[in-house]
Image (cartoon, rainbow, N blue to C red; front, side, top):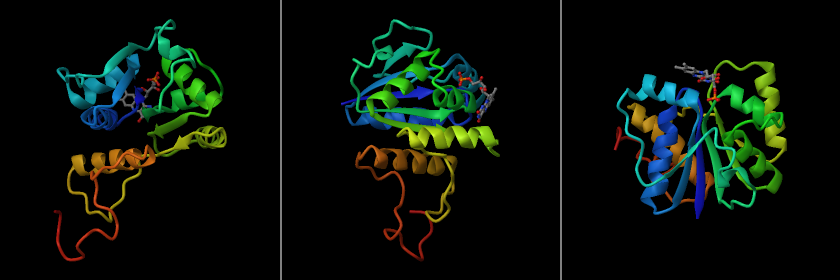
Length: 190
Ligand SMILES: Cc1cc2nc3c(=O)[nH]c(=O)nc-3n(C[C@H](O)[C@H](O)[C@H](O)COP(=O)(O)O)c2cc1C
């Protein structure tokens, strides 16, 4: 079971890393691509000394000879998390000039699972149109929009809610957030 996680230069890079950790915990094979702009955002959001999760296979975004560039590289799902509006636009318009955009193109044309997690607000008409175009092409558009019913109190709670929902889409059992109907009506955070 191989999964590809691409991290681009949008805010919320921790969601990508948290997902990678959860996949690795389940002994799944994880291939990771981090764009140069994502590396800058990682420094801003996680600090200069953030250590990448060990156990994953890391690929260079500029490596056009990587096995992942080809649709002969089989995988269960590709998740672009977070996905910048720039990368979203490139994918929606078939402009595959990087490993991340090429992986997405391969997923679309082979009808493999592609989950795109665009992080921006508010959204322009072109961003909305690009999302609709990708949805029509088979991608799952997963805006990381917060829910309050499970009573998150920390950034970790919010992040785990998103990661749990992504794992749900991948049909990977998880207990990362409290599901509706499974919560005590009276208790606070458990
Ligand atoms: C700190 C920081 C946060 C950013 N957050 C976002 C964001 O949430 N969404 C977005 O679309 N772009 C965001 N950007 C801009 C992207 O990094 C920029 O568009 C970049 O070209 C994306 O390149 P990439 O998709 O190849 O990683 C941010 C930039 C910085 C420096």
